Image (tube, rainbow, N blue to C red; front, side, top):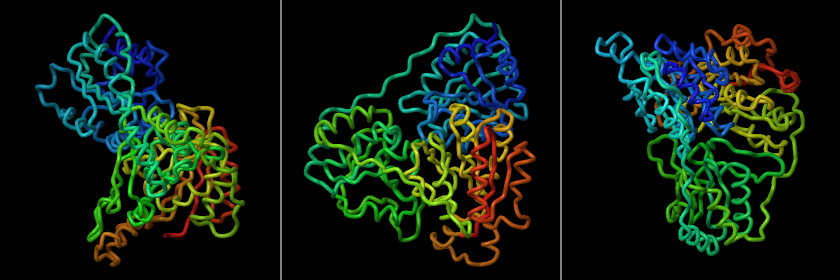
Length: 518
């Protein structure tokens, strides 16, 4: 057995059975070893950012890591944006980066780079195997590193000769650590605050606390004490819909977030960060917590937030019932296709059990609200803010949950970052419906141009945010990637009908929604 075979067998034994990859020469022994370990599924991506984003989407839904396999430092660099998103989401992800053979590094070949320096920006654990005798043990430890808690990017640097040299065999799995319990004194202190504060307090959940179980506990506490229940702006994964607790997400724009937080005297964080503005603006606050409001932390990422919420609910809400979302759907829309009628269309037909990968950006802002009362579904957000996330994450989610419909709400400019994901979806016959929200501009930047106070209403400035000349033809692009169910909608009626037809297909489908500029 060589190092690559031992590595992959160790991965499978550790619960990692899927590798999203864009390999090069240094990784060929890993690729060859796929034939020796059939329990490992290899999925090819045509760009490293698709591989890393898909690994993120897989882990968000499966609750366990996938691996991404990248080629040297440049490959890692190409995949870095979606690794950043996974880092901010606390996604458990094993990032395997091939390297030159150990004896070749001294020659400074053209692709030689400092992989460890690039990977260090991800704030996870980095391991570099230097002999084939180390690789299996390093792999088992790297998988445990990925689990955390909290979940993190675990990078394993893999020289080519470590893969081709012989070794003794795989290593046993390393059990991941369990989340740390929250100190009982902290829980008692926050219980006292909630009892005395009422509506002047808010509970803000993030991370795993946005899942249905902990959200219901938070809903009980909110119902009993009067505290407002909020979620961070872009939760990693939230479970929502009829019969579940509705959690109001903090607004993206600082002004809206400040309105939601206005009047609070106590803000209690549960796996969420204290809210700040996404960007700095002249003469505007970066910290959004209102003056006079004290921030308290019930649990940080990596702690047992569900256990803490359960203990807190026992103290302040032993008999309370949470307010659950009533079943409701908007009517099928008619007339102009715009942000609101598009949202109505999605809400009117969203399938039960759907997974929504949301990178709708400006034009998709209404969809979350219009789907709140739909049958139960999962929502995956752009946690780290680096665009080019939606299509890869939808791809990985569909691999993890092959029997559920995945809906990717995809802004047009962001789509062009990782459009190659459609090719992988076709190749793997993944059940993903992609809606391209085509308003022919970087609409959010048109808004931000004014908000940051730039003197920028000139034609040349606006031209840098315009996606015409030529117009992007997403129907042709999708067909070029092999998608057969493709359509373009220009009215609300057309879009609803075409989305219905796309949902009826078991496999990839694309609907281009032509929308007015914002």
